[in-house]
Image (cartoon, rainbow, N blue to C red; front, side, top):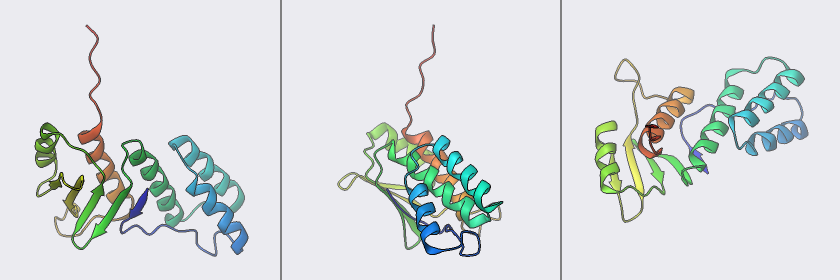
Length: 154
């Protein structure tokens, strides 16, 4: 899954010293397939290098986001100008209508199975979301759109 969003996510040189150790840590983060695995990587980094700075927590948030969208078959979430492009996503007409209700100004292009969203803004209604706030917003939107509701037992 390619995630190209405004998120300051990396392993700082002063947190993980040495190129070999940093590459090993990046490989572990890249292999994350679940929240549990992300937590295990966080625990290991904390144990080895101390309390992680924000860019490391952001990197693990990206890994969690990547694992979540992979379950829906999405392979790309990227910033394209002033829009976020999410693909591929197949939306029947009912879910296209739901998308319009959930995200103001969102468009769906069925020919290329792509959702295009305006970059969401924060509470001040001017500042674009970034980092974990952006990932959380996109995850919530996609979950509301793509997850099947659980049927109630009678």
